[in-house]
Image 1 (tube, helix red, strand yellow):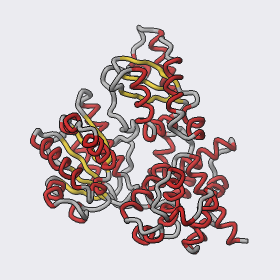
Image 2 (cartoon, helix red, strand yellow):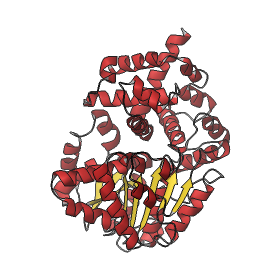
Image 3 (cartoon, rainbow, N blue to C red):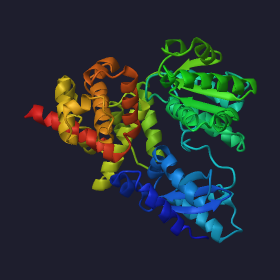
Image 4 (cartoon, helix red, strand yellow):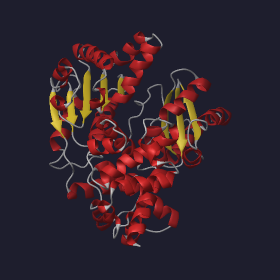
Length: 452
């Protein structure tokens, strides 16, 4: 099997300049290139958890450097080390059948970028809160472009909208591996349009988004107020529907409730099927935890799952809590039991943070990150202020219970959509032990001061 160590070291040297030192040491250590075939670069990582984080958070960073050293438009595939070892055995013995090892050979057909392998219909717990959306998404995945076009899924943050959309992508890819599938967010779509205008290269951008069999755009509400982006989206929408390509969109609200979006675009959003996903009930949250635990090869009893399920109201928050607990259990070499869960989640004391004044919370966040409240509330967008500001938005929403508008006013008069985006950014990072530890320490500092 060919050795790509030198190539990977060169890529990592560039990646190290783009990410924090802590993230580099935590996530990129013990990774390697497993194979390069027909532009598909297969990268092995120590665990499924790290594979998940690399694919979701650092795909573009890695791809930028990989393109320089491997070739333009390379496709990245991430696999856990256990699968990598199976692939190595197959390479060593060409007579071995991939089907017998449970591993599919990497070929010229690459998986859709940024679509999680584990986000499938089989891995999704279903109850009354998401049953209609689940059935609708399954129907679309079986016959994309034939029914419910577009499929518009709405609901609050963290209830499983992204899982449903990526399950569609995975199912379509399984049935039609050569199909052109793109999963993106409205923020990334906006950036593509802006960059195309800046470089006077709109033709390539149009080809990228209009030459597809399936286009999935997450958080479509963030195109609000962006006239040029909406115009491009409108024409892309029409082109894809005319050629029977499937469009799937998600939002935190119904199409007609999205402000500052052209009526003709709202009409397109509403032209197919609109379904909602509600906050999961206690039984569904428990089932979600058991499924997530199995994915991470974690032994979790139903009693432990019930205990954790009491502390989060959405699927994304549940996974974040579970990963914090798994990380702590591994660090202490302990089983996951009630005492460990209680210590990680501070179950006996964390409710007390809700009674604190928002200014006290902001003060503690500033002390923790060594910034001034005036800096946090200023219009400046310096890199060192981004994380503290977003953490403040998250804690003011989740722990103090302020509205997005109230948080925006408290943090220097920011628009509520900016606050929503900041809260969601942090929610997407909760599985990162470094971020979750920051939040836990800030919360603990506040609780300790008030208990004393």
